[in-house]
Image (tube, protein in one colour):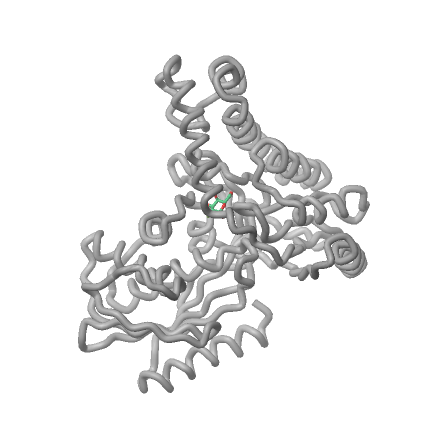
Length: 391
Ligand code: GAF
């Protein structure tokens, strides 16, 4: 977070809390994320390579003497009130990310009492930077600190994911919540979603920048198509499993098995599975590139990922494809691809630091010419994960 914005946001959240509830709150922040490579692999027990970024949800929390829950969103300028025994979905939608986490903590045997929350953020919404995962992780962490629940970092990420799966209804994997909680300055997280083991890979080349171009669109089929992709992957696994019972997820499957057992039955499911199996290998190779400082090779893999997401997994959209095509032959851009669930949001680009201004100007202009829409560019700085802001 840019220091001035960060301080302003913290101050705004803190002051609003005091104005509404008349006592000093506990303050936490939880970041959004980028993902360098490894898309739609997390819910297939595969690997991902995310990092927390310098854009955050800031959340103020305090105890109440009763069982009620008072919530206020600074960005929406909306309040919502309920009670601990009525943790149900709200017509306002944003409270669900908070109530879902509270429900999961209760389900896991933690004792809560009533609480107040005020939150705000500078993570662009609907841009695929995981503002909802950040809100879930901020809530879980804040409740754990407030009621001294001792929730571990891994349980925090899993609780937040369960809230998204069960309360909000999006069957997401663990990547976004894990990155938000486990993020570290200038380090990528190579997370193995089959057993949650992870390794940090330094990413601090001063000559490179991570630039995000926001399509400024979010096509409506995003969450239903997401759940459908997940089902298609599971179906592909079931076809392989009939012959290889040891294959429990696409992480265990080979391209040969897909050719043999999935392709003859369903060409679409085959394409989905082929993308995932190739992407898991691509991520492993990409991590080797990074360890050798071979960013050229890593960048080429990012373009390959985009091609797979566009043609095989079919979660891209016209605007994302245009943004990637605009930089394919640009010497200052080593790699680019759509990022996150798809059907809108941002592309992630690896750009030579000295050329960032020129690239942003050219892409912004050309995108508007082609789509008659605006794009917003963000430079993402890799930052630390969920933390307390006061004692
Ligand atoms: C969304 C999901 F929330 C993640 O779990 C992940 O599957 C991603 O889409 C695609 O890689 O961000």
